[in-house]
Each structure stands twice: as C-alpha cells, then as structure tokens.
Length: 204
Image (cartoon, rainbow, N blue to C red):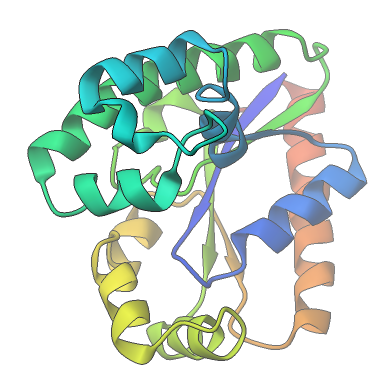
C-alpha cells in the first residue's frame, strides 16, 4: 500500500485532482467529507460540539448550524482550537479505518486541505501539492465560487503560503492553466504512484 497526502491552496483545483485519481482507481479518503460525517445528528462528535459550544449551534432540525459555528470559532482562536480538538481526532480515527480497509496493493490518497498548516506530511509515504498562482486562485474564487475579492483574499491569507506548500511536495501538479491541461498531468502522476506502490518504494 502506498499512502499519499494530497493538498493545495483554496481554488488551486485539489478537488478535481482528487476526483481524477479516484476515477483511475485510487482509494480517496476525504478529510472534509469525514469532518462533516463525524458531527452528523446522533454522533458522539455532535454531542461533544454541543457540550462545548451550547445548543445554539444547532439548527431547528437538530443538525449542526455550520455558519453559526463558523462565526463563533473564526473570530476566536481559542474556540477554534477547542473545535479542532474535538473534530480532528475523530477525523484521524475514521481516516485510519478507511486506510486499513484498503488492499495491500492500493494507492490510498488522503485529501487534506490543511496538510501543510497542520504539519501532517510525515503521516504519508509522499505528498502531492496541487499548485496554482495566487492570481489564478483569486480569479477562480471570485468567478467560479462567487466570493467577493476581499473574502477570497482573506481565505487565501488564512492558509499556508504557496512556498510553504511547495517545500513539502514530493510531486507537484501544476493547475495554473485550463482544465484540459490537468488530466494528462494527473494521469502521469497516477502511473508514478502505481509504480511506487508495486515496487514498495515510498519517499523519493
């Protein structure tokens, strides 16, 4: 088994790379998706969040009110750390379960937005960074996601810098161009991953 950490700045196109790798046969473990699952109604994770933040972070239907919780934690680093202290261990445990269920010859890709920020690179055999220039990221966030320019800039500023991400990369996917230039690159990366998985080779 080869374990891969996949990351990239907001708007760089990491989700598209993740989707392509899954279509080729990678076992994709999506940290964002798991983070939502571990706080669904009826889970111990949601109970712990309510214990820490109060019932006002619930919707009328009893699910987590994400905008409400976000407005609390992103304005207060201590509250954010408290939330991360609840959610991150649950995400880590579920990610390990999914990885352990994969076969010995599988390529397991962990899609982790904040891999660089949380210094998680040592958890994986190698790290892939999806790279785009800040100008391209900003354009995509405003044009495709409907963010204001100031909102997009603040989201980008809250993440690691481009240089910090590239410093931990074993493989880089350049997604600064149009979508049709991405697929051939990702297919080449997939061939490299399967080659390493078959040969038992991890880090370069």
